[in-house]
Amino acid sequence: MASLDYDGAAHLFRRMGFGGNTDEIDDLASRGREGAVDYLIGYNQIDNSALDSLLLQSFDFLTPPVDNNQLNNGEIRRWWFTRLVHSKRQFEEKMTLFWHNHFATSSSKVQDFLMYNQNLTLRQYALDRFDTLLLKVAQDPAMLVWLDGTTNVLGASNENFGRELQELFTMGINDVVTGQPNYTEQDVKEIARAFTGWRFNTVRQGGAVTYNFFIQANQHDNTAKTIYGQTLNFSGEDVITLVSARQATARYLVWKLFNFFVYPMTTSSADKATIDKFATIYLNNNHSIKTLVRAIFTSDEFFSERAFFSLVKQPVELVVGAIRMLGGVYNPGSNINGGRTSNTLSTSSRNQGQDLFGPPDVAGWDFNLGWVSTATMLERFNFANTYVNNRNTTNPGIFVTNDQLKSITKGSTKKTVKRFFTRLGPLDVGGDTRKMLQTYLETGDNGQPVTYVNDDASVDKKIRGLVHQIMCLPEFQLN
Image (cartoon, rainbow, N blue to C red; front, side, top):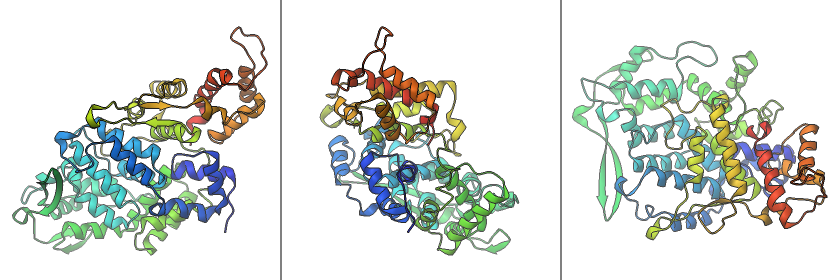
């Protein structure tokens, strides 16, 4: 079994989740590489009852589930951020986030409760066979509305889903290894015919609402179709099976997973070989997402020097990670009986460029340098300021207590700065930056040197300022 040091465990936790405190990282390291990955992937075995209780106390649309008239954008965003911060199953939420970007639908067009239900579907099937997940998404009401599946009828097929199924959800326009086109315009037209008549209905019973998929027989094209050179009476389900088994799909999924979880891929021959290596694992293991991601996260590529801090933090990663790493608090509040609620996290993430349940288009978000602009960087710094300076622990919102900060500090400025770099990364920064932050701790309001004292007053002022400055460093923006 490959060993796992502290830095490697922290890297694994940031990528498969959003980070953790020292004890959580030490626990992962003690499990070794394969054991740590298996622990995070096997999240169904992790007790999440505390989150379940918190959700029931904080949201009134969970029991019984109700329709869109009793739900809104703010509530589903507050609900997901509550999960992201408080779930013990971090990889479950991270994979749900991956698929939300991959199958990008938005509340700009889709009813909020349909978006909520789709999120449940993505979470439930996140590590299933890709065929199973893809079929569930294709039949999901949110996708049927988003890509106009409900208007795809016999004799006048709508090509939106048939096109995006191939371009964005499975293969890409061109094979990411060979560069060859993966499909033709005729394939788009024929696939669109296979999905004609796909519908859903709404069933209300006892205050609960469910959505049931069905095929409207008189609107389904039940004739032969020629797809990828084969002529059969293909159904939509047949297309899902066909496209999931293509080598181009295996390659595209590996490419997407690497760009999200490992490092930005290039068109080099070495990267193409890496794609093919992991694509073979997908093809040889019945298209199992779980087997594929396990192979990726236990690989030498994932733990290579190239992978460490090679991705720009998504806004969600920055916001949620800062709370988890420092042991801070997110109190979502409750709208039950008119209680007060907090959407601080979703608002901050949106201002930084990532609005959960509202990706910019069907292609999802533009990652890495796409997160970086003058405006979004300012919003990152604003979040850091809000987080470290909020001392109101009686209201819903985010905060970090003096006791939580004091538990990280040490008796000397050198050790204190080192501890916070370790906790918020670990971050590898230059000696000049470390010295600058030590000097900050040793300087009074009048600009004169002072003796650093690890007391409550110093923690409340200087340590909070230290954390803010670290969160504004370029190194903290990387994952």
